[in-house]
Length: 121
Image (cartoon, rainbow, N blue to C red; front, side, top):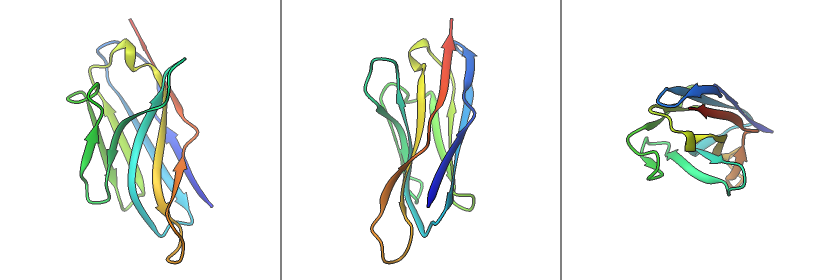
């Protein structure tokens, strides 16, 4: 069993900063890519940022230059630092990880339960 637990969401004013973290635990053999997705009310879930096990990153155009994704492989944790937040960043943010739980199994996608980020004017 694998669990992803997010923390760090909350209310912040536009222009402010907020950091999210997500720790993976349980039966883990290898964690490949990790990432953050978000879903705003009435919209589809979208990729915010992702990072490979080697540290290569990918960002949605809407957050480039404002958000930074990083990971600590020793802690099985991925982080998202969000700066210069805008009203349109308001959403539930979900952690995602592609995890192989044992040497004889295929990798699977795991999701956290989500953490709400609200940006106010």
